[in-house]
Length: 119
Image (cartoon, rainbow, N blue to C red; front, side, top):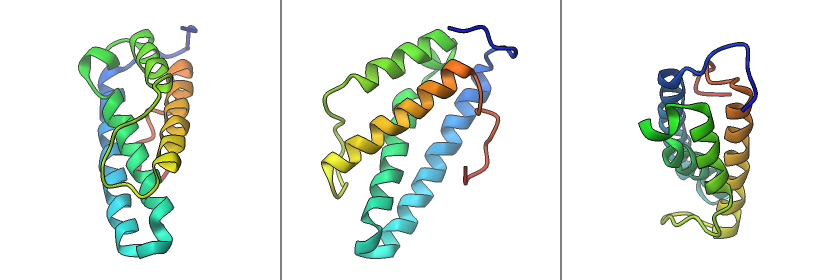
């Protein structure tokens, strides 16, 4: 990994992932109330929750290189099993997009301090 000016803060990363999971659940509930027109929003929120949940874990977040390897492994998967979504292809595209975002954040060690719901 690249040497970043600030040290890797595993508790902060875990906190950020947990807050993104909670925010994604709220977004899913809002999209569910939105009806047919909000199906894409629901799939996006479900993809964010799936990606954050897959990356969550003390084993993977303890070190920057370990989390980066885990994200690379997840991006390389062929499918992402989940139930209750509207469009499998759209969901998988959103999962890969979100995993790439997490990989960039991990590589740069930047963005994990932003814990507000809307980003």
